[in-house]
Image (cartoon, helix red, strand yellow):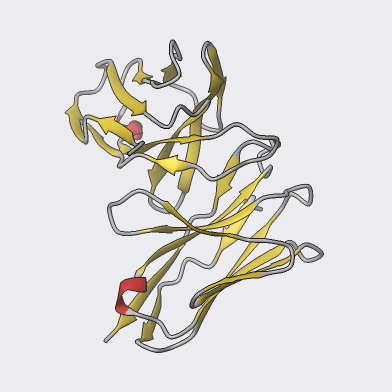
Length: 114
Length: 112
């Protein structure tokens, strides 16, 4: 069965370190998204990609970067981790279309920055 | 004003009760509307899409009022397994038709 996976599932790191969160999907979806979820804010879009070599900034992109070298993967990098980036991170993917279609989410990564 | 607003709850209802959640959105150009369900410490999953004419899926009924920019979800005969957070989701709220904007969610607890 097609799926979307994230790794690691839990990560503790220190302020200032570079951290990369992996996202891999086997749906063969062109659209991929990274969100963070914090209490009281719901899901907020960090970065998104509509295909290979395409990346775009979302609502809360400062301090994060992504790259899309193939259809299956969209790794999220925190260049210099800050305590404000402690959160739960979700990756999602969807089929391309004229409008917004259902997004399928990975299980999430809980990141703690000390 | 938030792009998608929901009453955060929590809603605590007995089994068998009927409960309704409401949601308002700010972008009148939005065309796609969804309700997602999120269990504690899990990822969001699509519950149902919301169509202009309203739609029903078993015990769940979704309604859309474009004039008032308002979406609702009705759950009849609540089950313990319905306990979760329900997210109202709209496209185009952030200016891009292909992006989804999520409400903060309404927490439901169904009590035995």
